Image (cartoon, rainbow, N blue to C red):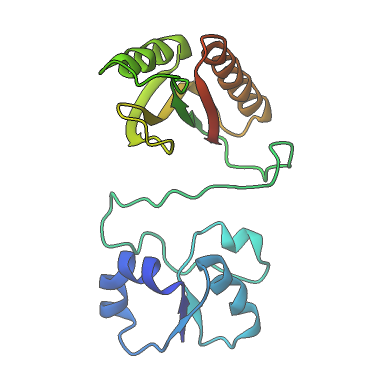
Length: 196
């Protein structure tokens, strides 16, 4: 019996499954972590496809194989989420990493239709004011349906820091909050969507 979150895990690991577990009965679960947790109630003839961190989260599980995804360069992003940024975060292995954030930015809604391109100018001004390295910018139509008024999703990153050090995330959070404040002072509408 192979338990997994059907679509994502099977798609990423289909070659390994067909070569090594072709006769396995597939059992759907709501997530890969739920598949790992369900192993605790099943017999020893069961396995799950999940993140290796599940072996540390649930006592009694052992990692049988690493890197069973089809593509060696295929890395799924996993995120820790909570209702508040003050929630405690489980420790991670010590390593250098780039702290990242996702911001939603738009120019203030004008009282009159804007001159073509003026919002783009505002966004460029806001991006410069952020003073953070933008690694990705996605433009979407604004919800207010005004012509030439867009919302931008901007992924930014800071300097490499020690991931396992709690103060690194605190420093990164402070850097991002200061950048947000600078854009707000210029009249931009900006919201922190995520921080990692």
